[in-house]
Length: 407
Picture (cartoon, one colour):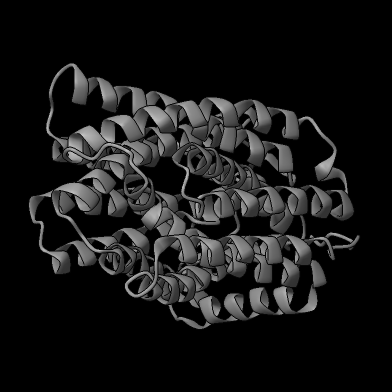
């Protein structure tokens, strides 16, 4: 038996590593794509859509693999695959090549999605919403440090924007290898060897996870809400920088854009962390009703934030961008904790993966639809629609009521 403090520390370290490595890569990539490569709105959305399509197709099978074979090795594979994709992306600026690397990143991510929370829940022997929120807080700490390092490299060392992406990719691979060496897996019960030799165990686990979602009113609400906010998130994530530049934000070149956007992101992260800590100390995790009320209020705030980005005033738009980004950072771990609270142990990773799959489905549908609209109508109208989707999701979340957790 491994002492429970070690899995907790490693779980928090994974959150910090995600922020430290993924934020600089995303910052550099968006500056490169939007300014240097001058991709159109539909091309930017296509990059996200291909990633999410890979997630949609892979999420349930890889979640079931984690439940059947090994959650530890599923996580290790994830870090390495994502690292390869992140490392290789900057070497070719062809859209088709970048789409392929985005697909690999999405496929790799699915091996980690759900498996990390399922792994730590098994290792410490209990569900813990607050641990999931602490993981998110440490992720924000990683974001701050990672962005600080990236900005130091860009401003002081005058490192190229694509070099930041390459180093972040290598860091992902290195972290995966470290996890392979030190990560315990003491409380996981894999399927029998005879079952593991066929695909039946994976298929059975997938069906059990689907049945769990179908039979739980709370989980059904979470899936619907996830689809709605993801439809909005995809277009906002891909076009927020385009919208702010359209309103007057500086865009001299990719590196300069990454620098000012990075400083804005750091400031936003500093504002988000106290809110996360305050919510983590609150009572939202004690009941479904409290969780539903907290999430609904946050989603309404996020909706008005996106609507603010549809205005013509850059200061209002920046404030709205900050509000929506804060809401997304806070609500994601709250919803994961809500799913984890209602998931049976034997299909925990699969159930969590279904939620990620709902996210991917929403981002694909919303991204394609709103991204295509952005080619024909003003961006402010696209952001107005995205804001209304958040408000609708908030209204549905309010209908969440008490339900006895399973497992």
